[in-house]
Length: 168
Image (cartoon, rainbow, N blue to C red; front, side, top):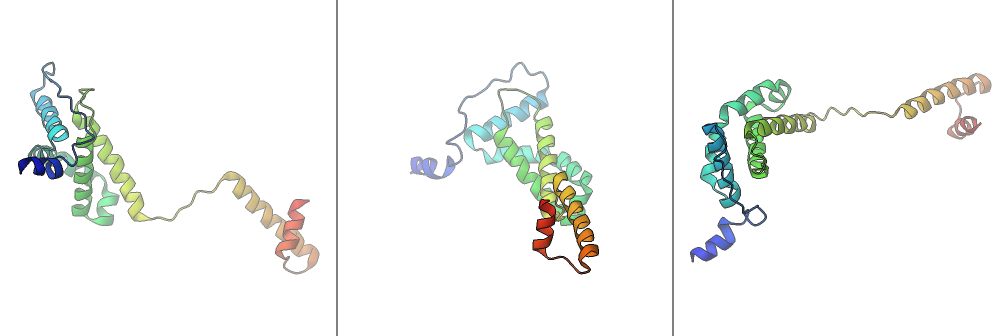
């Protein structure tokens, strides 16, 4: 019975992960070592308890990141921004490269900040569209051609007349 549970439920996220266990004996900072071991447990065994411990450890940092992004906080509210930050942290935990043996906090804060900024842009939908320089030049040329034809013809030029004039 447990084999079926293990096969279908507990390990559904674990299939594509690296199965290598790393030793972190050369790392001097005990807090970083603990974080790396928890991350390894999440990646190897899909350990939800270890994931919750990591989220609790980074709660203050997540709060600081959300509070520093005032545009997003004002747009969607603190709670939704914080939930997005937790979601990004979970993805960071799963994607963290244990081989590099870097400090996880550096990787996490950078990625969370970038993802929150991307989320803010998606949510705000400012609608600004960047135009290419040649398109702006073409627009200026079109307005000039329209003014010239208007003075020549004494009326508003048609689209065909503008097109013909622009081709010359």
